[in-house]
Image (cartoon, rainbow over all chains, first blue to last red; front, side, top):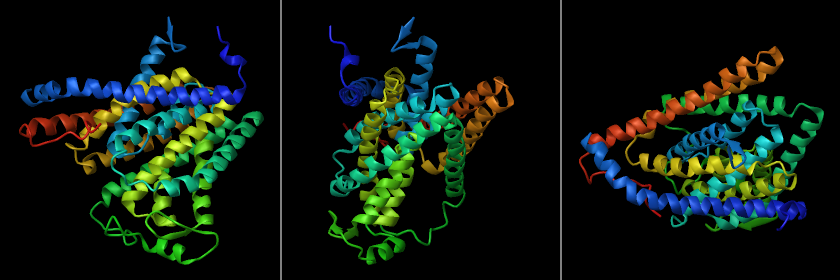
Length: 49
Length: 340
């Protein structure tokens, strides 16, 4: 088991920046898929409401 | 039960708040990060944690925005790169100020007061813009590819070293570094992306056409966020659970806010956004006075005011959007949120 907090602060800070970057990319792509699936029927529902 | 180190109620709160901030970002083109730090301060997070986490959130939001606009092409990467040193030094300076104030025990108060003034000023500008939206600005260039008179005057001063920008014009490295450093200090001190001052500064001081200024400012926000997250990360003060929860909400909200721009006239909503910022300013002031007056109930009032006003404006945008969709025949409106 790797002890993350044993790394120097610079490595921890860089890992944090990379983690946020990955989170952002995953969320962007994931919500893009959700949007393509959900948006058309949602707009149709609002139009017909 | 805890997820991401947060209780379920707090996790839900951050996701919902991130969603609202994302809607503002997608709709108004502003990160809304200036709402994150005050919210965290009101919730009792220490100033360095609130600012550092907000900077990491700014980075994530800017990454998403950059991916969304990557094919527009209106980004002066050379200028962005030249600003990098100034931004990095400025953020480090802002961080040093925060930690110095924290040692003195005044960080929360000083940052809080700065936010009261900042939110009131931006709110006032939005309201003025909404009221005077038909009156032309005398110093505003009429064409998006032109630059204002003040920028032309600043560019006429040849203070070496001069650098040639992507559009072929020249600018002094002192102006570029000054803009980068000035915005960096504000970013590092308040935990904001700084787009609300960087974009006007690039346009009015460096003299980049408006279309490129927006994209270049976004690139600057990405750098500010990355440098800020790294700088505060070195001190181990970033709460990654808070950042993740906020990003989960804002990534969705930004898509909906962006799609809403195809349906909703920004002028209909701008005044509400301005009023919300004034209420946010009041919320921070009330939150700060809670400790001075020894009345913890004011903290609750402050938070309800901040989140409530944000929820109200988000509802207005979504309501206008839904009404516009209903009133437009199918196929005549095209959401802009599906351009990836």
